[in-house]
Every structure is written in C-alpha cells, then in structure tokens.
Image (tube, rainbow, N blue to C red; front, side):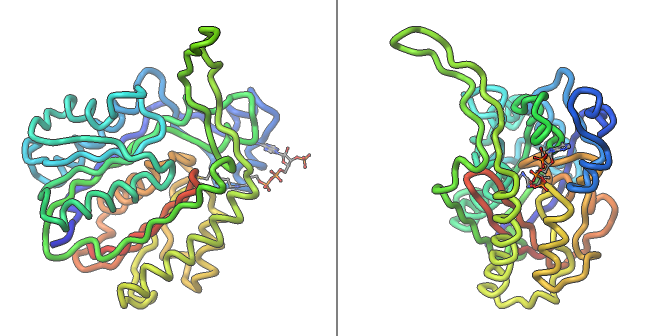
Length: 320
Ligand code: COA
C-alpha cells in the first residue's frame, strides 16, 4: 500500500503586495527583485492567520477529492508559522473542517514542510496505521519578516496548499528526506515567546535572518543530488518524469537545478512571480494549480522537491 493524492486545494490571501509597493517602504525596485528572484508580487494576510488559510485549502482539497471530512484519519500540517506555539495548527484545522475522527499534528521543516509531512503520512499509510489523510503546507511568513529588512522582506508571501491522500496500490513511489543541523543558523527565526525566570522580561520578537548566498549555493547543489537519489533508488529514469514541482523560492534556483539535471525548462512549472516564496505552501499551491488546469494525468510521474531552514531538503517521486 502507498499513499495516492486524490484531491488538492489551495488558498492565498486577497491582498496583493507588488514590488512597487515594497519600493515605497524599503530601498528596492521591481527590477532588482524580479531580476534576482522572478517574484513580482506576493499575497499578504490582513486578518486571517495560518490555520484559517490552511482550513480553506483543506476544504477545497476535500471537495476536489470528493470525500467527507469525517473519513480523515490523520491531518499533518507542515508549518513554521503556526498561529499558536501550541496546540498544533493541525488541531485548529481539524476543528474548522469538522474532521472529528482524525488525529492531527504539525511537522516543522520550514520550506520542506509539505514534503516532510507527506513523507510522514506515507509512513503511517504504508505501515497500515491510517488509510485516509490530509497533508497541508501553510505559512504566514509576513508575520516573521522584518518589513524594514530589504534582504528578506521582498522574498516571501503567505498562503496554504493541501492534498488529500488515500491508501492505494499506486501513488508515492519513494521519498528522500535530509537535514544538516550544522547549518541551522544560515536561515532562522528566533522563537516569539520567552518569559524569563530571572528578570521576568519577555524576549523581544525576532525576525527571519538569512545568509542568502549560502542558501542559494546549498539549494542548487542539494536539490539535483536528492532528485537523482530518489530516482536511482526507485529505478526510474529521469526522462520518465513529466514534471519537477520544485519549491518556489527563486527562478534562478529552478533554472540552475534544471540545467544540472539536463532537463528542459518546460518540465519545471513556476508561479513565484505571483505569490513569492510561501514556504511550506509553495509545492502544494503549485500542485493544485497544475491539477486544476488539467495538467496531471493518471500514470504521470512527478518529482516534488523542497529545501529550506534546518537546513532541510528532500524529494518525493510519485505516480499521479
Ligand atoms: N533591493 C535592492 N538591493 C538589495 C536588496 C533588495 N531587496 N536586497 C539586498 N540588496 C543589495 C545588497 O545590500 C547588496 O548591496 P551591496 O553590494 O551594496 O552590499 C546587493 O544587493 C547584493 O546583495 P547579495 O545578497 O549579494 O545579492 P544576491 O545576488 O545574493 O541576491 C538573494 C540575494 C537573496 C536574491 C539571493 O542570494 C537568493 O535568492 N538566495 C536564496 C534565498 C532564498 O531563496 N531563501 C529562502 C530559501 S527557503
């Protein structure tokens, strides 16, 4: 038994923030941002939080799958920006969608969150513990960036994507998951809570800090390597893969990965132009767009790959 994606959904906030809008608050330009990243606009929340976006994406995924929420056994949410330290955002989603028979918890792997959550779901399904699951990638990074720091605030956006999976004979073929804790501080964000026993002072809120060039070098090296690994271990040739659905951080990273894999760019769909880097949500949002556009046919082989803070990275090969 493996897990097959039987429905997808996504949600992005209505508020559009363009590169020109950002140029009014930090010293930047559309030319700089679009030229280096491919991003032209992003969606940013007004009132809604991570769980709201996740629940909206989940409802659409359930509708797309044509199953009732009560059939869900497990909800896994990849997020690093939950609305609360605890409980898990997955529990808030459970309540919002009425999945009364499920168990839910979050998976923290930053931008690799959706893939790590899907892989965890796969392990439960393969072991015969659960049959039907909901995997979400949702992040509200606008809450974690310093809107005065031009080196990070221009990169991110908010959003959520979800997939309903079910135990079937075909679906996920293989996954590779990796992390390098020695590089945890290349991309990080300090915890927002911090009462202090000695002086009672609460820690000042922290923001995302990042060594952009280090992240870039890491991504273009590790992503092709783990894609090769997942294919080799599955005995599937790279030319059999119809699409590579990569984390949408930067079009130059995607182009570099395509070049290193010696694969044509039309196998690498991209949408960061419209949403920026929505962290754990990029892969499921893109997957949902492709699914709804009718680009995915039964039997297609697809590789999904993510990378991010941890540092974490991974790749999943699946048959649609
Ligand atoms: N607008 C204008 N100038 C900016 C800027 C912005 N938003 N952000 C930084 N700069 C400036 C820098 O201050 C620097 O100026 P200086 O030369 O006078 O010091 C110059 O642009 C070059 O900065 P640098 O950091 O070397 O640029 P870069 O070519 O490495 O591009 C990134 C920066 C962030 C776009 C690039 O490193 C990247 O995409 N890294 C990956 C980041 C990522 O994807 N993170 C999320 C992973 S999940």
